[in-house]
Image (tube, rainbow, N blue to C red; front, side, top):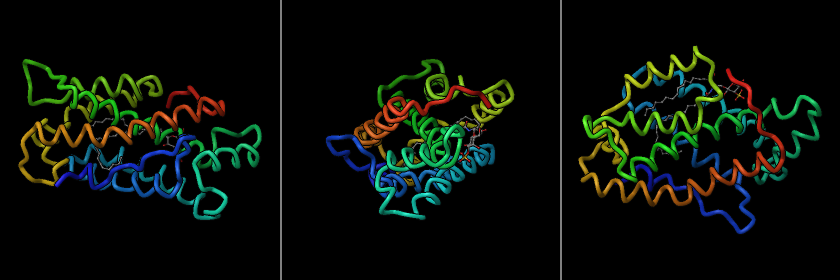
Length: 209
Ligand code: CIS
């Protein structure tokens, strides 16, 4: 069984709007997966992601009819918060969550493309570094970059990571990668659509933590 295919993202409609409920359902599986990575180092990442999801869900549940899509939330908060926006509310939570999702997108794509450190083929550091550089590094000051370096040392081996994606079962690497590629279809379209929404609403911020 594949964890990824159990938690597929939905196909987007033609206007590329992201249904809030479906999105929250899909990302809600991510924190439990982080537990499977096997090191306490990841708990800081997990609590950040859980915080983001909880914040977005909190806003959505106040008025599900009003916040059918993620864009509805951003537009409503823009009205509500004036000059404080976008560094506020579910908008800020989604701004950061999408960076974590972009990290996962680049990591999985790199694995699917077979990128490897030829001297250490059972490590996934090449893919993790690529994901970090592409999704997060520019938003991190030196202290958080150090936390990243610590997390990198605790990163799972390729074989253990692929096993975790197969819910603990030994599955041939090529079979797991087929599932990764399938998962990436809707997942990547969703992450790209959220990034484009932030750009079109001028909601992206560039500060570092
Ligand atoms: C596999 C090895 C992974 C190594 C990963 C290393 C990643 C980088 C480590 C950096 C440490 C980050 C610690 C937290 C830093 C936060 O300060 C920072 C800023 O936080 C934001 C809050 O979120 O600050 C704001 C204020 O300025 C707000 O407070 C905001 O909170 S709010 O608005 O909600 O109140 N946060 C970040 O930098 C985000 C870091 C995200 C890192 C994501 C890494 C994900 C790693 C997952 C690896 C596993 C791969 C998974 C592959 C497949 C998953 C399958 C699961 C199936 C379900 C699919 C669902 C997607």
